[in-house]
Amino acid sequence: MTTNTQTDTVAAATSRRNRPGPLKAVHGQWGTRQWGTTALAILFLAVMLFPVYWMINASLQPNGTTLQTSWLPLSPDFTGYATAISQQGRNLGTSLVVALGSVVFSLAVAAPAAYALAYFKVRGAGVVLFAILISQMIPGIVVANALYTAYNDLGLLNSIPGLILADSSHGIPFAILIIRAFMNNMPASVIEAAKVDGAGHLRAFWSIVLPLSRNALITAGLFTFLFTWSDFLFALTLTTTDDVRPVTLGIFQYMGAYVNDWSSVMATAVLASIPAIILLLAAQKYVAAGTTGGAVK
Image (cartoon, rainbow, N blue to C red; front, side, top):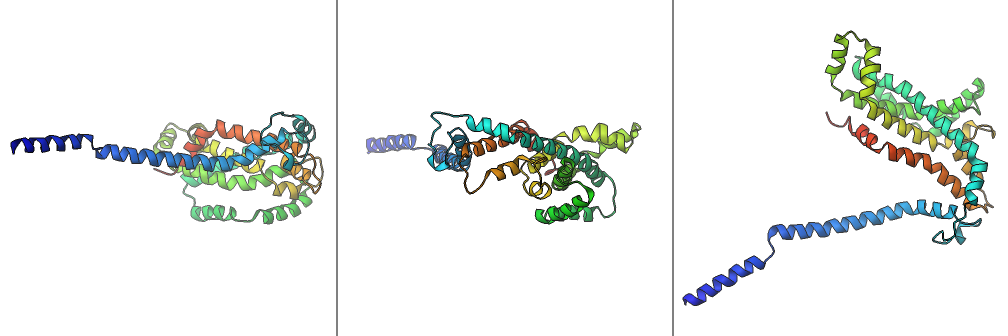
């Protein structure tokens, strides 16, 4: 009887040792779920990046339709890039000048406005912020048509300053919201200490607030650049000649019912994507800090 009891006890202990514990079971279940989530994320990423790959692949093919393009650029041909640079190089330069000009002008207007809304006791500040939000909801075609009439009277059609002002109408409201949210999270004691040392509002804004708001400024500037770089509506409405033509309008003019040089079209699209990709990679950490800086206090 005693021997049977001891045998049962040893068998039960052995079974408990061999049985996977709760931690191992949870870890194994979590590992399986993590692998499944990773595989699903890779699948979604491949689907989203496939158009980009196909654009690059088609740009390296000999002249012809996209239906005849092979899946891999086994024999890359850079003729499309040579054609794109020769025909669209000026348009790329125009887009770059307009985008950089819009960034400078938007930040020059938005930063002081955000500072005033954040630190000054402005009567009706809530109404101003609400009006800024409403301005973001106005369809772009309405703004473009209104600007066309005004530009025609002012002589700003087919001009780089005209495009800079038009594109800044999208960048300034967004920049004000981003920068103000960041400045609201900034300790007021820093500005008060500067005022105790004799600094006025302008000196405190230039020497204290702007350096501390670097992440928000870079974030607002980056999105303004992307808005302007990808703009098509203002370019189509406010330019009527070949003298001033952004690259988005240049790609549009490539398109037609009888396009037979898709490699040049895709090469132009690849070249137009490079500045945005470089800026996004360079400013990634600043954008992450700038967009979340005003979220918590």
